[in-house]
Image 1 (cartoon, rainbow, N blue to C red):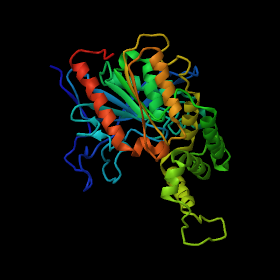
Image 2: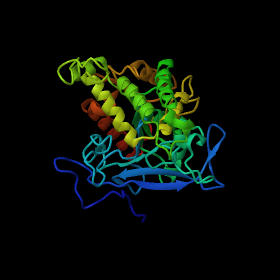
Image 3: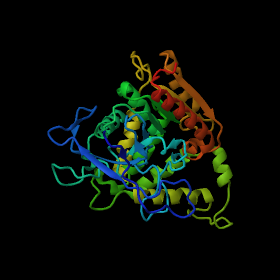
Length: 398
C-alpha cells in the first residue's frame, strides 16, 4: 500500500518557549519544473522556464489523498505560513490558523503553502537568474497574472500526487488565487474560502497600487529595474509600503493605536517623525525593504490589477460543485464588503453552494490576519462539513 506523504517539516526541535499548539520547527522546500523546452506558458503569450516554487507542507496526506488544503498568501507573503524557521522567533504569517487543533487542523488536514511566481521568497521572480544571461531578470521578467500563479501551483499539486484539493483558502491576493483556482480548475477544488477579496480591482484599488509603483520607479536607484548590483530603490519601496499600510488599517484602528500621540512628547518643528503614526510608517517601510524585492512589488501589484473574474467569468456556464465560504470585514475599506457580496451574488446566480459572513472588526483589511475568533469558528465548521462529506462519499452538499 502506498505510504503516507508526510510533511518534511517534522523535527525533534521545539518552537520558542511560550508558543502552544505549534507545529514546531519547519523547513521550506523547493520544486523546479518547466525545464526548457517545456517552459510555462503565460497569459501574456510569453514563456517562463525553468520555474522554481518554494513551498511548505504541514500535517500528513491521507492514503486517499483527499485531505489536502492549499493556503494562498497575500501580496507580500511567502510559503512560510505556519510554524517556526530554525533560529527565528516570529512564526509563519497564518500560524494562529494552521496547526494542531486550529481551524486548518494539521491533525486532520495536509496543508500546503507556496510562494507565488513573480515573488522573491524562493520562487522564480524578477530577482532570479535568467538562464539566458546568467544575470537577474530585472525588468526583463515576463508579466504574470493571478492565473499564471495558479497554473504554476497546479504543477506543484500534480507533483505532490493530489488529484483534488479539499479546499483552497486565502485572504486579499490569496483570495483572488482561491477564486482563480475554481475558475481554472473547478473539478480539482472541493471547497474555497476567499477572505477579504474581490472579483476585480476597483479604480481606487488600482490607483493605490499605481502610486506605490510610481514611488518605486521614481527612485533613481531603481535604474529601470537593473539595480541588483547597486542596491535596490529603498526609498521608493519604503514609501510604497507606507501607502499600503495606511490602506490595511481603518480610521478607528489608527485612532486606537496612535491617535495624535507625539513620539517625544512635544513638537519638533522639523520634518522628523513628530507623531507616533509617522514613526510607525517609517519603521514599517524600513523593515520591508530588508525582506522584499522592489521589482516583485511592481509585478505582483500589476498582476492583482489585471485580475478580473467579474461578469460571470468565475463560473462561466459550467456545472460547479465547489462549496464556498466567503468572508469579509465591516471596517475593511480597501476590500469593502460589497465586493465580497458580489462574489456571493455571482455564485448564487449559478446555483453554487455559497455561505457569506461579514464579521465585525475595527482592524480594517488587516482583520483577515488578526481577527481570529470569528474566522476560527466559521472555517472550522465549514471544513469539517466538507471533509466529512468527502469521506462519506457525498460530494454534493446542496
